[in-house]
Amino acid sequence: MAVLRVMLGVIILSVIVIIHELGHYLVARRNGVEVEEFGLGFPPKVWGKKLGRGIMECYYTVNLLPLGGFVKLKGETTEDDTPGSFGAASLWVKSKITYAGVVMNLLTAFVLLSLVAAIRMPVVFDNQFMVASDTTYVADQIDINFVADDSVANELGLQPGDQLRAIDEQLVTTVQEVNQLLEQRLGEVATFTVYDIDDKQVVDYEAQLPVETEPDEGILGVGLQRYQEFRATWSAPIVGVVSTLQFSWETLVLLGDMVGNVFRGEFEAASAGVAGPVGIFYIFSQANSLSMILLLAGIISLSLAVMNFLPIPALDGGRMAVTYIYAVTGRELTARKEEIIHGAGMAVLLALIALITFVDIQRFF
Image (cartoon, rainbow, N blue to C red):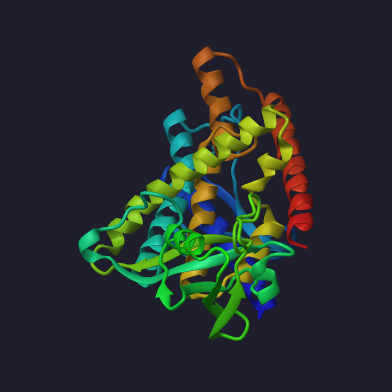
């Protein structure tokens, strides 16, 4: 089953990239820029043929490496002034073509997050948007996400993924409630009602609690986190729009923190919140519901939009940033200069991806 989920992750990631490239393609064709090739996957080429009618008529190729795709425009360097080339287009047209991929990814994220809101939307950060009058909580639980060695929880056989339902038959809905009840029962025998993630059943455990609290491990020796999911009906598209904005902002904040950690030399902290292809596929392998798969796809689409909007070398935003700088300063941007600038940017980007992949392998395997 995990292998199937990984394959699904490959397919979803590829579709999201192709949707991004479709944005470039459509806007280029509508603005008179010729498209020489629309590739599915990356070279080497396996098959190619001219297909389609009207605006969709193009030379399509299927390539060996399956992750994503690409659009090859005629004359992609700025100094190319051949009619129908990208280089000959106005700065406004170049901007529309370049950022069309970002728009397509934002629209994709909006659709996916709206679907998630209509099915089951997890609460993943504080002040997450929802319409109170149209919100139904379909999950509200206390998850165990960490079990310390030589702890009460470890002796009971509790493990990450289990859910703490009640203490001495008193239902608990927040971490604060759990802590208060445990403090009241220090030195006593308490009964814990837990949903066992492996056996898929509710089990009661009895344990003698310590007289004093361990500073580092707490009373039970577990890490607890409240997990909630809600569902919307008529407001699902509204939740989708605002969630797209909220997740985009959170992505920007994460990137800002990552850059700050890099400059401070805190490389482990910098890599903690990001994932490369290996990490993405591993996360998909752990997804156990349609809503979670759709949420992951939406977040990936948003991340792709944000990364390509920012002036990151070799990506769409970086290419346009260079074009704007040379246009404003009136300097000539030759094909050689573009090749050096974006080639260096791509080298740095590939090195970063390789580093993140190495970290992902150590983290998940």
